Length: 312
Length: 183
Image (cartoon, rainbow over all chains, first blue to last red):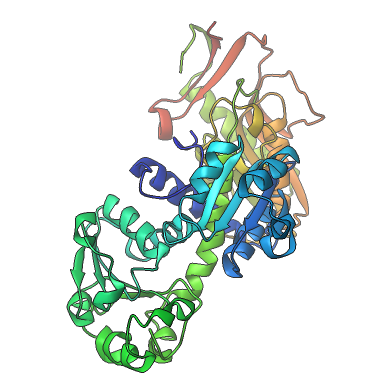
């Protein structure tokens, strides 16, 4: 069976069954990435278009490789070098892409809700690769996959998300996904970087990072988005590092077998020290590897078939 | 899934046991021993059959042959025409296939498309010296030029029939029956 949802727009409205299906399917996909010949013919003849209105290295490359490992044809469209510069709207761009025969469109866009708008416009499957401050579902799915792989479960785990929650779509998708799967989610960061009414999402909110780390099974450290800090939401990077940076002493408050995660790219010495980032507990590179597997699973599940019975 | 009426039993538990014992001897005979031989069961029912064959071979030769599990879902050529997307399982072949004599094991040989997919899947894991095919039942109606090296039973069937192989490990009984295809 495929997914109940036709698109992957976010984890807020998706069912637990769908999340589990993606995580289960990602496991055999990961085996393929570990092989000498990293290619299966599953999506031969299908095309995946990545439309990125924001810069990204790892997400785009990850989708591109995921599609290629499944034998799909891929093409990338960057807003900076396309007709978007001539004033073409997102909808017109998407219709053009669809008219060229795309089966899946992967969209990253600075506006929240853009992926949903696109999904209403086109018939092909849409995957949200990050829309504004809203959601980044594939990152949250790969985080959940990594957690499940190491801990064997998600339910009942204490997951601390530390840092700039306000600007983080990764945090939002993680909160929706993890709480849905039965984890206890804690968030901590400067009060100015915590959105109001956070507790209504079913998470525990802390302004002292130590409180959030106490007994945690997983710590997900968010990137301080230097490009968004011009509004002076905290006094200085140095002060942030002192009060909220995840260092060896702070990580000792969590469980001994804590998993340290980071969606990357890291600002070493600001939100996380190099010592913690390179420690045995850190699974940051593994997250990147798992990202390809999860995206392969999604591409496979969203391009499911429709009609007659098989003759196998 | 709708199940049709059972028409006839082709093999019972003893029949399956005898067929597997004979095939174990044939595999040893054909390959002049079992050095370099590995069995790979195709999910789902090829897997318990491969395990049983490996046990028989050990009883005869006193040596264990490696057994792998092959999931061919990602190698199917009919994703676009399926009513429901097949569930992907793990392929577990934890020995190098390069240079090995691989015996693919499946329950029923029908159109040959599963085997074609399995051949692709094995080739992606390495370069075997030879690939041989063992099936418990060959029911005919091939759509590809594929034939089995070891066959438990040849059963001429009509396309309106289904061949159902039941194994203890999955279905709690050992039997092969011909069913009428549900309307």
